[in-house]
View 1: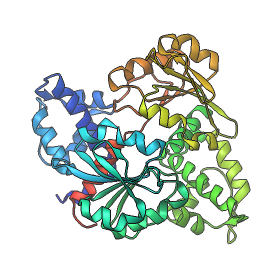
View 2 (view 1 turned 180 degrees about the vertical axis):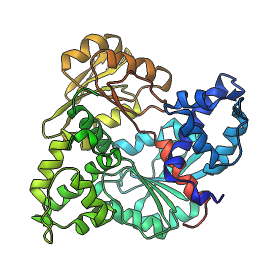
View 3 (view 1 turned 180 degrees about the horizontal axis):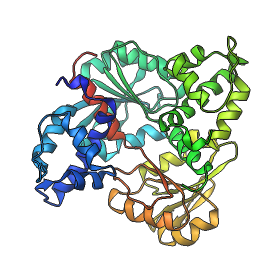
View 4 (view 1 turned 90 degrees about the vertical axis):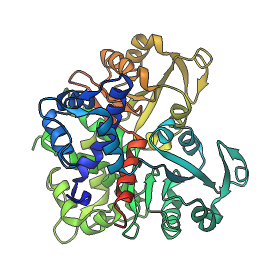
Length: 210
Length: 210
């Protein structure tokens, strides 16, 4: 089947399966059943089997999934079997913490440029990159070959920066600023808002004991 | 209807509606139509009307929703009309950035304790709190009256810390560590994993032009 037909909810669970499979690999587990994988991931076995069925004929009935093969397969579907380049825009408290986030490198993402508007930051070396002036975004970003941008900018400027990134060739944006982006088709956007997550928790608490 | 019957997907959109309504309030918009609210939130008008219909009879046909009233109503449903106390566990790069995240305070959450295991950090003052020893979690957390914990701990210790927090009376956990928590019923968990979000973006890029 065409990978574009994989449901969004399945795609969102693939990174979780991958993480659990990498844990299984660490403890040298060669094969994992759908029920064991489901337990590791906090879901159920029929869900695991259904999700993985979208990727092809992968498991062996009564035995399970080959851990190494499934890692390679999911990585291929997610397009992270090759390293992907990302730029980070906004080097405030949050942006600087993100640059040190080990999960990016471990999962195949490399931050190849950092942009900020603060003259005291521009030109300083952070990790393996030098902070660039965000006014030079249109020349800096295409030169890196990056396809992904991580936005940790102040809310008020985020929409404008995102539109400039899209025009400069960025095709995927991870937006950490608490604003909803409106962009032309062709740019995939993922929004992470921590206060939104806390509000969803709060809703569950407000209902009394679960 | 019982609020427990509101679909999870609707609950997850309520914070977004609230954010857009607060923006509308900032520009002194008294009334907002479902189509205007949908456009602000990046969704469509039937979705807005359906989501808000779970909350009761709120809008006026042909006119729209009263912005102030809808803010108050959604805040009440989310349980953020009163301030909620949270503890932060893990004061590394990521945890320290979180303490400064303005969205928490703006959305009704107060971080009332910070816990870490590093002797050089324990006892130091950060923001309005003094860092406590995570070994004293069982006495520190109940004393704060917090219901929510934000976990920015190393992956290897996160499950153990979460189980101790649940035993100490925490009822909601926002987990930022890249591990899947397994907890007894009665504790709501939200997981935010930035590398997961990047992998979902990567999937869309791997499919070629949208």
